[in-house]
Length: 586
Image (spheres, rainbow, N blue to C red):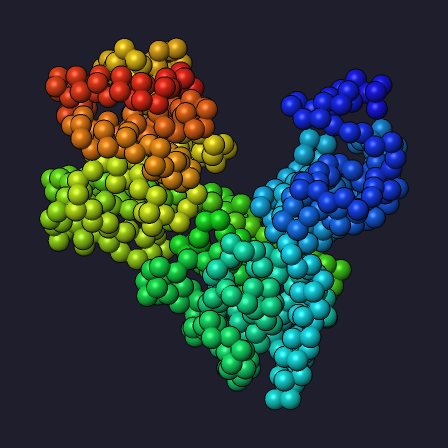
C-alpha cells in the first residue's frame, strides 16, 4: 500500500481522521467489532470471495449503521471484452448487477443511482441503512402468507392457470423481495398501487410494512377473484382500501376526493396495453410524495412495449428518472420477468399576491405552470384578511394538469411564501412574483439547472449587490459574473429543505425585521440565510421571462433607501456577505 502513489490514507491519516490499515484480506475481517459505517467501493475484483466479503461487511455493521456501496457491472459480459482489454485481463471475474440489487434489498436505501459510466459499464451506487429486521425474515413471512392466499383462492377455483400475472409467479421471490425492501422503509406511510387483481403484491406490502395505509385501484376485470381476495385481506388490515374502476379515471377522481393523500411508494401494475400504462404514470405524479419510489412491473421493451413507452414518456418530459432496472431468470407465460425502480422528480410553484388587479397576469402564469409536465402543484398565497371569491375559485384538483391550491394567510407577510408548513410535496420549489410572464421554457431552464445540483439557490432574476455598504443596482441589472454582483431578484428555484432552514428559531430576528420593514426585503433575507447555510453562492440561470413591473414599486426612491438598510442589517445580523453570483446554464 505504501508504494501506491495515489493512496491518500497510507500514512495513517485521511483528512482529519486517523486510519488503520489491516494487513490481511477482507475475507478475514473480524466481525467481533461493530461499525457505524462500512464502505465498499469497487471491491469485487480485488477479493477472492465477494459474497463472503459482503456478508462480513453486513454483519460488521451495527443496526442502523450505513453501508456505502459502488460497483461496476458489465451487462452481457461473457468473459471476453475487447474494448477494455487491460481491465479484463487484470480482473476477468465479474458479478452480474442482479447481485448488487439483491444486496441492496438488505438495506433501507437512502440514496440510489445507476448510470452508464465512461467505459460503457453500468455503475451502481447506493447508501443504505441496516434495518433491525433482516430481509430473510420478511421473505419467510411472505412465502407463508402467499402460500395461504394461493390455497384460499384455489379453494374457490382460482389457481395459477386463471389468476392474472402476479409478482409471485413461478414462486420467484426476487421481485417481491425488492418491492418489500422499498415498502418497509420507516419513511413509508402510504402505498398506492394500480392492479390489485388477486392481492399478491398487496400481501407483499402488508408483510413489509404493516402500519402503512394501502390504496389499491383495480378495474375488477375478474370481479369474483378480486372481491374474494380483497375481502379476505381486509379482515386482517383495516387500513387497506380498494377503488373499483378504470384507473385512468379513478386516479384523478381520487386526487380530487382525497387532496391530503400522497403516496410514498407507487406501484404501477395495471393494464399493460394501449394507453393505460402511460396515463397511469402521468396521473400518479400528482399523487407522489417526496421522496417517492415508483415500482413498475413488466418494464420490457419487447414483451411489454406500452409499459416501456409510458416510462420513456415520463423520462423525456423530465418528470421521472429511473433508479435501476431489474430482471430475473424467470420466463412466465412466454414473457421475460423484468421491472424498473424509478422516482418522480417534480416542482411546486409558489406565488404570493394581495392585489386583485394582478389576477389576469396570475391566471396566465397558472395556465403555463399547471400545463407543464414537471409541475405537481401551484400554491397561490393570498396575503391579507379579506380574500376575494375570484381568488378562491382559482383552486382546482389535478386532471392531466397540476393541482392549484389557494392558501389564505390573514396576516400580510412576504415570509408566508417561505413557510415550511405550506403543503409542498416535491423536492423542488420555485418562488415567483405575481407580475411575471413566464413560458414553458422558463420552467424547463430553471428546473433543469436545479436537477443537476439541488444543493444551491438558483434564480433567473436581475443582478444586484448586497454588502455592508448597502444595496447596489442599475437598470437592466448588474452584470452576472462581476465580483460585485452577489444577489439575484426573487425568481428562485431551490430545495424545499431551505424553507425549514429559513424558519429556524435562530433566524427569527431576520424574519421579524422583514415583517417590520416596508422594503419587501424577504428576498435578501432568504438568500442570505440560504447561501450562508449552503456555503455556496446563488447561481444565475438564463431562463426567459418578462417583468410587468419593470419600473414599479422596486424603483421608488424611498423603497430603494429601505433596501439599503436591509442589506446592511442582514450582513451585520448574519455576519455574512453573500459570495459573487455564478453564471449557470439551463
